[in-house]
Amino acid sequence: MHSSRKLEIIKNLRILTVLGIGAFGVLATSFFVANGLRNEVTARATLTNLTATALGVTLIGLFVTAILCLLVFHAFSFFESTTLSQAIRLNEAMRLLHAKTNKESLAALRYYRIDVFRAPKPLGEDAEKNVPCKLISTFLAPWAFRSDQNAAFGSEYHCCDFEHIQTIIADNKAKWGDIPEELPGGTPMEVTALQRKIADLLEENKKANLKFTAANGRESLLKTQLTEVENHMAVLVELVNKISTEGKPSDKITKDAFRAKYLAIGKIYGITKVPGAYMEIFRKNMPKEKINWGGAPTQGSDDEQT
Image 1 (tube, helix red, strand yellow):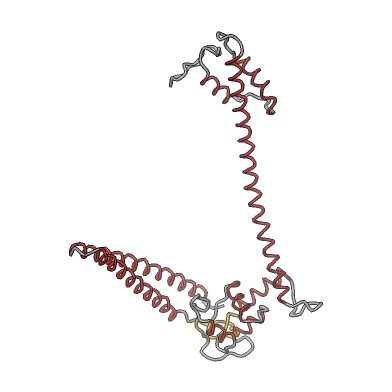
Image 2 (cartoon, one colour):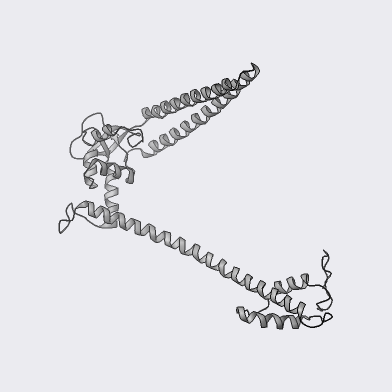
């Protein structure tokens, strides 16, 4: 296998360097914009001049920053030379992965994250050993020309790491088994690829359903708890109305009487117990003339006593 560790380090350094230059360029542009606006304000420039200065300096600064980022990005290509222990033509590698068209080949390169290399001399149809080559890090970049990509699939110089291709094939065989180029009944490989994609989507859907089921369970629990709270609040409201309207004004309700009335009303809502929290809500909010629980609290006071 090629020195993947070295290439991975170069990739990470490239990203960090480009991000660093981009951040520095943005900060420098902001500084020049602020400095230019300050000079214009000192010179008592018009609003039009201020706008032109801000836009002009911003566009120039960002353009220069983008150019520098591109230069640095491509500069790292000088360090991406390596030697593949086994190399195979790009076109042959795609055939091993059952990619028949250039579009399918590009999709396979992206899906399997296959690196594309260029050798200094043409390669044969079979895999070759110890091939010095250079990584084409921008082969799948958005700005890459499609004509260059199409030409690479028919080139004798563009290649892939054969050991990586073998690993992909082995993984696919372990997952799907041996699949011939033409399946029984004339089923084309496109149908097989679609079946694989459907199976992958079903697996992803299964995982998503598990997450949804867990979230749905939590939602159901919250709804149940909310319903219980609403039922207890309804019982409290009805109980307060009964106590306020029934009996003599001088009558006081005891704790046992409260429990009995609470459960009598709560039967309608399926309530069989009187939670202490709701008893405390009732005790704190009822006038002291209406309750007799061994000494009524002083409503409205921070220091409540029972």
